Length: 511
Image (cartoon, rainbow, N blue to C red):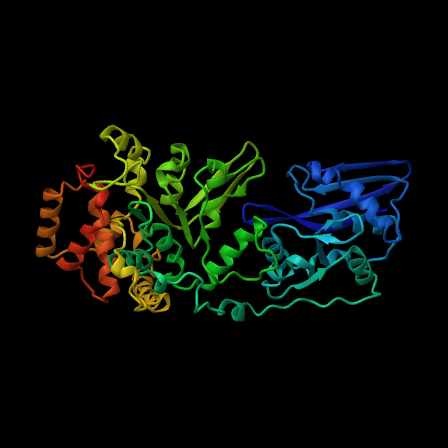
């Protein structure tokens, strides 16, 4: 007897339907074909134990299972439930007249209970697109799959529940989530709030500009100046995600298996990898490519603390994703693309000892040591960072001040207003939503200067020895400053403020 059961494989952030064909014949044997990996080959032992512990048996016949399309590599333990149901129906132990209307996925424990799987959201989206009636999956993953409207999503705890439902002996409740209600659950009292930060008004202003324009930013300052504290609070002032951004972000985290009983993500991600991270872990990859930290930070913030401590080759692999806002991972047989549109926030000490130009510093660094330390960050990488700001330690008077600083909610209101102006400006342009994404053509169109501003910028570039690459960055940041003030045109005061945020471009910055 031949039976077909339907599962799904995830490549990148998209799913592909897999047809599992189970054939029973005379003889003895278990043959699994269709490029399964080791985890799938081992499934026969899990399935045999799970069936026995639930009153069924592994048939003593020749079982041939084909996972079509047969030239597509299958991986992971999520096909256990698919294979088990196929074997039961093919061996005539159960009747399932509507089997072809469902997608079935789940990893089996030896007692027949189900373990969570990866990529439930892309699988549910594909099942809906291809017209399936329902989707059986482990209960732990049900919230992410239930985001998809128009598909019956059944969260099950063990194989017996699926068997009873397919035979018409039992009922299962479908899980329904109001996507819009989930999405509009906003966090008005974030865990990390700018009201906790004493002093540092100029740095807060800089963070507000970076958030409003989506600009990458680097904070340079001695230990204890508050660089990490400020960076952790940046997501609290970013504008709320759109529904499209929330779905994109949830899909990536679903593929990586990081959702853990969470439905739609409505908070922007904040990723802070350790400086010992490998380039594969940062950009994604592996034998079966998985999303890296830059994709996990999609639509959010990637924070690299102590930037020069990261290996140079790790930092260099970020250059193209920073520009293209996606990363493509190529292997011999297939290629996957993950989105990676994130805000880069980096911090660093100005010298190996951390104290630069401080007469009371306990340690000094020689010019050679400083040059070697700073040379770990390449020019092309710095070129992709719009704002450089020096962070100085907070004096005691500010730390002891009991007056509460401005909260993140108030700052986010101004940032959101600035982003709305940009959204309107770029509504006719594809893949450009905020100022940091502008290319040279758009800069010329939207960042026109009057004569006074041109003269100021020319003088600044000559006197401060600013490099040529600083020119476009200054114009982008000045455009964002103008948007925060709802000013239609860039004026000299906007240019003057933007010039301050290019510290590392100045010749002779090392002293």
